[in-house]
Amino acid sequence: MEHYDLIVIGSGPAGRRAAIQAAKFGRNVLVVERGRRVGGVSVHTGTIPSKTLRETVLNLTGWRERGFYGRSYRVKDDLTAADLMARLHITLDHEVEVLEHQFARNKVDTIRGEARFADTHTIEVEGEAGETHRFKADKFVITVGTKPFRPDYVPFDGEYVLDSDEILELTEIPRSVAVIGAGVIGVEYASIFSALDVHVTLVEPRDTMLDFLDKELVADFTHQLRDRGIALRFGAKVQKIEKLGPADCEITLEGGRCVRSNVILFAAGRMGATPSLNLQNCGLGVDHRGRLKVDPMTFQTEVPHIFAAGDVIGFPSLASTSMEQGRIAACQALGEKAYDPPEYFPYGIYAVPEISTVGMTEEEIKERGIPYECGVARFRETSRGHIMGLDTGMLKMIFSLKTRRLLGCHIVGEGATELVHIGQAVLNLKGTLEYFVENTFNYPTLAEAYKIAALDAWNRMPPLSE
Image 1 (cartoon, rainbow, N blue to C red):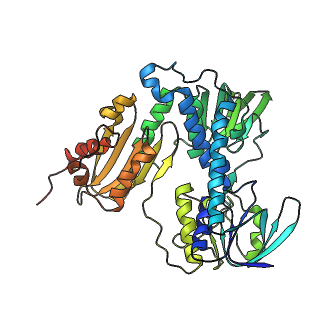
Image 2 (cartoon, rainbow, N blue to C red; image 1 turned 30 degrees about the horizontal axis):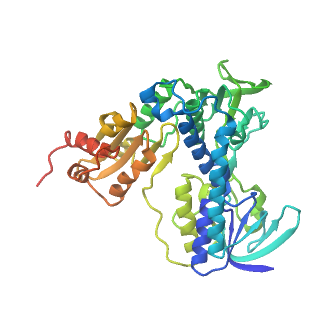
Image 3 (spheres, rainbow, N blue to C red; image 1 turned 90 degrees about the horizontal axis):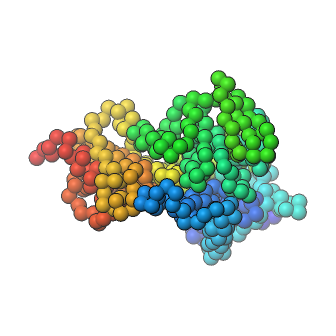
């Protein structure tokens, strides 16, 4: 039986970082991946595919140019699902190739198959042909990620009633889509389909969506969705889902209201991909969503030599944070020096338009009783916004009245996930309002919105005491 210093189960963002970090420490590492190719959910059904699909849709539909040339403007007429998939496969092949090269260059062993714990230090890996391999390790990092939540009352068929993995395998673009679940995944796909001029209905049992974001940001985003014709059904619990015929589905909501569409996307949550791991054999349990509990600073589970990172431990479930969690988990597992996870990290939602945020929301600042002031800039106020034809988009910053430090930065609009890093740097370096007011930004850029928002706040703030 082969013995390793560290075995990583799963090769998504957390798994790849954990494995490569351990290899750089000179340890022998094995990565177990049950998918067809390395990369995990992030590469094959999650982050990379959905963001590639988004970029393809915006390019081929001419979405970004419609501010100038009108809503009827198209780069390519008669778009097909094949047009959307072509770029997707090229991108995924490249991602896998890069990852395989990283593993090979760092001498990380990989094996394809489904892992399960035989005891606290031993796993069995079942290959495609049913053969079983056994491996021992001193330490483990579990990074198996998540899979879509598929309740029994939803008649999934892989063709017209789909989960968020299956939606990437559509063979033709539907005329209408109903999305159940206004979380990050549901909102992203609803807005992407809307950019394709597909009629979209977004169904959410709660009265609000994306509650972890600043409410002013969500209000602006919601207005943009409604303005584009997306039908929002909030506070609407699903009673029944039926497939009446080919490309003919119906959702019955509480109160008797019905939603008809060609395709239904069920995107109401995900489950930890832990059932097949036989965790009881190593003394671990999971919560009702199949997620593992860990120490938030070290990512150590209740079993001291087993660590976990990434989506399988729950919020924030971002590829970016998962990478850092995996790296820290490997350092902690191997007794190497590790830094603490960052207090403030950017959150990116790749909807149309993008949303990105870092730091505290206005609601959190109020709860803490911190005196504050806000500054807001609209992208249409910037020359770059005019050049790009933008008539929507906003950047909001929140500053402490006492220290004048930046407390939060919230952006909705084109390029939000890139722009937020300026706010992130100033926030984590404890910068103040004066940084934005006194410094020069490239002109014309969207980043100039930082200065506009800072001046907006500065005009309402008490003078700086000597």
